[in-house]
Length: 292
Ligand code: GUN
Image (cartoon, rainbow, N blue to C red; front, side, top):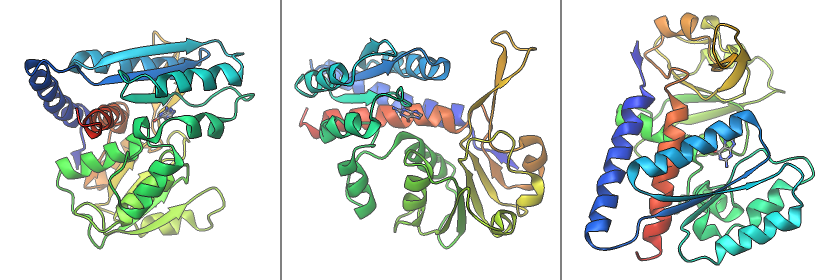
């Protein structure tokens, strides 16, 4: 079994981005600039956004964090997005999800200028991705693809089973893995909460992407020997032995599954780190697409 190490791969991506920023600065050009909007004080969202901002700083990107209280009116949020859309110094805009219930997520996402949609959630980005056109790819699936590429994992003709059909992970990764391309060409099965015989389907998988948000869900008896296992779960589970009072658990029962698979991503230290690296790559793409 070999670990797909998010620390190593994300660092390689970030080192390469850092070099590009240095080159830009040597040419007296400004750095790429990411704006992140955070509504409310959801603990996990706070952590993710703080990490995104910190990673921008590490590689020399500019960043702006815009915070709103949980009860912010939708109109105020829409106005802020318009302002960021019209600000030429901002290359990428992301709105951390989930948003409070009184705000219509699709309305917010659809207002983001597709040229600044570094999360790849706008319908224009989704449409381009489905058609195989250059576009922003949602950061988690993009991060997974970067990991497959780094470890040169053979995907062509393999059966990939994706558990979960979210717009953020399951749906886009199923499209990317099935596309004609070096790390695509898989035969993909998308499973979800209504899937029957999930265990039998998983046992046929050469590659499993677990993205359902249920800690420890994928057990050893659901995984074929030598399968590649990608764990997208990052659930906070109460853990009194930890200072924070919780630990982060993936969707895969790592201790059970790891011994028999060929490659596996750890949690933490796997896909989560790749998500941020991919977001940074998208931000540079937004900057460069403007002709900077
Ligand atoms: N919430 C969970 N994952 C993501 C992500 O990739 N981007 C944003 N904006 N919100 C999220």
